[in-house]
Structure formats: C-alpha cells, structure tokens
Length: 627
Ligand code: ADP
Ligand code: MG
Image (cartoon, rainbow, N blue to C red):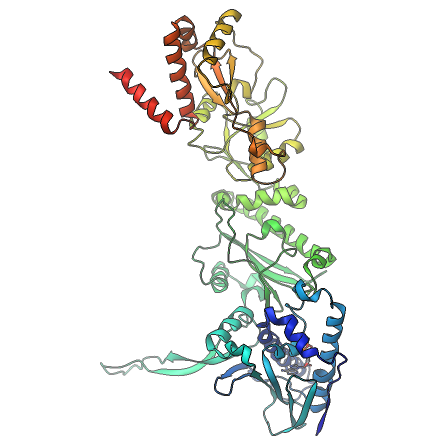
C-alpha cells in the first residue's frame, strides 16, 4: 500500500518523548486504554444515531501479555481506522499536537511535571516500546491495515487480513522497560488508572465456582470454570444520580475506592454540576484524629472516569484536602503547570463550588438531625475550624452549624452561646467573657471553680483553636475568650462588687515580701488579690495573651514573632482573705517558709506543674506531716 515519512518537523522527537516522559512512563497504558475506550464510545454513539449500521454488542477491551515474544497487546472492538484515517490521525494530527506542545514548553517541560500528565496520547507508547504496531479494521466496509513504526520517524502501512472490527495495538517492549511484561505490574497500573473506566477491561481469566447441582452426590467437589477477569467497574457510584443511590451504596463505593480503609466514613457529599463547568464526584468525611496527620488515602481526581492524580491541590480547597473521595471533571486543564491552574478561572470556580456544597451539606445535616451532628462533631471539627480560618466564604456560612461544646457536653452555635452566657458572664465593662478549657483533666480544678460560680466552660481542644478564638474576637464586638487558668476566676470575669481586704496595706506588703523570698522570681509573678475567703489561697495562672500568642506561633503563623521561644511565665495569685494568708503573716520566719513552699507546691500540683524531683520531695514532706 504505502510507505513514507511521518510528517514531523522535529526529527528526533522519539528520544525527546522518551526523555521528557521518563519519570512517568507508566502512563502509556492509561493513554492506550483511553484511546481504546474512546474508539468504543465513538462507535456506540455512531450506532445510536444510525450513522454506523453495525451491531454494537457488548464490546470490551482486552490487555494481553506475551512474555516470550516481549509484547503487550491492547485490543478493542471500537470503530477502528481505515488506511486514510491512520494516515490522518496517527501520522499527522497526533504528531503536530505533540510537536507544538514540546515547542511551547521547550524550557519548562523538563521539570514542570507538565507532560507527565495527559497529552501525548498514542505516542507515549514509545516511552516503553522499541516498536509499535497497529492492526486496525474500520467499521466501514474497507480492508484492515497494519501500521508499523520502530521509533524512528519511518513507518510502514500495509494491508492486513484482520476481519473483526476494532484495533489492536502491539507494543514491542524495550529492554529497559521489561517490567511492563510482568502481570502484577500491569494489574497494578490497570487498577490505578482504569479502575472506573466506562468500557469493561479484560485482563486474563479467573476461576469461578459453578453452582452446586441439586442432585449432587455426597462426595461432590465444587467445579470451577474460567471466566473473563474484568478489572474495572464501568459504572462507579459518582456517575449515577444521588436519588438512585442508598446509604449502603455510598459506603460500598468508599470501600471500593479504599480497600485498605476499615473505618466507615461519617457522611458523604455528592457533587453534581454541569453549568458553568462540568463536575461530578463524591466526597467523604472520614474520622480524623486531632493531630492532622498526613493521610495516604487522598481525594482522587478523574477526568471522564480516567484516573489522573491524587494531588488535588488548587482544585479542592485546602481545608478539604483531608477528606476522601473522587472528583471527576473534564474541565480541569491538566496539561498545564500548577501555578497556571491556580490562576485559571474555571478552577477557582470549581474550588468555590466545592466549598459551598460542603457548607450546604453540613447545614442540612445539622438541621435534619442535630443530635447526630453533635455526636460527629469531634471527628469533623478540625476540618471545619480550619475552613473557617482559611476560606472567608466558608466562615460566613459556618455560623449556622459550627458548634462550641461545653465541658458538660452541651453544644451551642455562636449565637446560642452568646444568648446562654449573656446574663451571667458579662463583666462590668459590658464584655461577654467566654471561658474555655483545653483539657478537662489538666484544668479540672479551674473548671470546678468556674462552675461553682455558675459559669459555663467550653471545651476547645483542636490544635488551631487559638487562631480561631483570635478571629472570633476580632469579628464579634464585646466578645472575649479566656482560658479558665488564665487568672483567678473573679479577675477573668470582673463584676462591680469589690471584695474587701482583711489585710491592711502594710500587712499585704509584708506578706508579699515573705512569699517572694521563697518563690523563684524568674518564673512567677506574685499577685495579691482580695478574694472570697473560701477561694483557694494560692493559684497559679498563665495570662491569656501570652499563652495564646505562644500557641499561635507554635502552630504556625498568626502569632507574634519569636513568642514560641519565650520562657513559660506564670502568675501566683495569693488570696489575701484566706486563712492561710493570715497564718503566714503571723508565723515565725521558719514556719512561714514551710507554709509558702507547701502552698506553692499544692498550687503547682493542681496546674500539673509539679514533676520529678520536686514532686518526690513534696510527697515525702507531706507524709512527714502525717506522723
Ligand atoms: P487523542 O486521543 O488526544 O486524540 P492520541 O494521540 O491518543 O490523541 O490519538 C490520536 C488519534 O488516533 C485519536 O484521536 C484517534 O482518532 C486515533 N486512535 C488512536 N487509538 C485508536 C484506537 N484504538 N481506535 C481508533 N482510533 C484510534
Ligand atoms: Mg488519546
């Protein structure tokens, strides 16, 4: 028939392709299976509109390894190509596309990861093959043809006696790519890239047990037959309508996506939009631990059911990267670098849509079953709090469903919280003081004291809570947060009435001096307060501002520079109205020292600060007093 020169201006394009694509050379299989799928889907379309007058049937795609012959076969029953079409699509069009691409990205292609993703299609076969053959028979009444190319720009095109419709691609695997002749390797690639493609893909056979006949004898042995091993699910859940799916279907799909995940997802969000861009998918909220660990099972990005990547940065808003599931969109430009992606208007819209959809879903879960939502709160709060900090659109919507739990397991929205606290926890300057703890056990005594006053204490224990509090204070006038151990409770929420001091100013001065001789100045500031005579005599507190800034700089950004390196500073609040204060004043110098030391240790103990040698000495000393 014909032989000639492939129409290409870059003479040595093959070495180029091989070089640029080397790091990601496994994608050749995805490209060839995609072409086989396209060919089949095109035929389906042509038969459905009556343009191709052939039986569509139940076509499948087959992958075969010929280890001895060092060949890999990709066979489809799609529309095939005539000799003219091979000339047109294989010899010219694809080449000009590739050529243009390489020309355009000459400088950046090498390490941008650009070609690594979609784009080179058919010619990516040369990344792993020293020679490629195409045997193809069009659905049109024309003879089959056989195209061969050995990696130089020369090709041959001759007639072939193939009679069944469709295309067979034969890769003569190059010596440096023999791994692609291994069954496990091909299976791995097919499962990674083609698991949800729309046309059944056969890879070998598997044994299947025959049903036991009714008249089976006692010693019946199960019989097996060989059946096609289909590696994909052509109709994954995300391509269906939400109304056609049950809760069980969603869970099953989660297991299909992540066979190694044994936790059930908390809930799912079905994405489905076709204007102004196309996007489908299902996102799952997994159970997350508070330490924001990097997870291995990430959201997967597909394009028309072809796996592309699990790096969804820029497409899915950052705070939702901890979710799992699938996003499928043909509208995401994949041939371009990530920085371009971020600037792409469509991509920004997709990201905003996902944020909105997630917020809407959370709101409806909250409204439909608040009880259930509250139970899940601990597992989802980190994502939501992070979302409030990073996406202003999400922050606005979050007011409707973000919860603030108390140490007594009551759950308030911000509005409810303000309402519940306003009568009792507004201070003399009209500021509403929200008390919180970060650890129920460690701050137990402080929580107790607050409760005795009739105050409610929130339990806020996510790692980013100090940032969130800072933001809430900035956005809500007359709202302030204070951790229960930030000061004495009467100082945290200051009311009009002043407690009168039992001690004179002189006595106070004396008391302060005797305490300061025992307490190390570099860690503690002694602060005398006229408190209720029943309140604890010594309390250690850590000022809210200092602690919060330290926490913020420890968890990154937002805090004050260098605060993380500041030494721990505490206040020692001494209740001048306590009996102990009077006792200290009225004792001899030796006794004074003992009393202050013991009281300081007790205060440290209730703040979890008494450790090691000091703790041992304290226990020993305390036992002595029992003798
Ligand atoms: P793209 O798929 O992006 O068009 P490719 O380089 O992958 O680019 O393929 C070029 C063209 O070759 C296809 O558009 C198609 O017309 C043709 N082609 C490739 N593989 C097949 C196949 N298995 N059956 C029929 N046509 C094919
Ligand atoms: Mg292609």
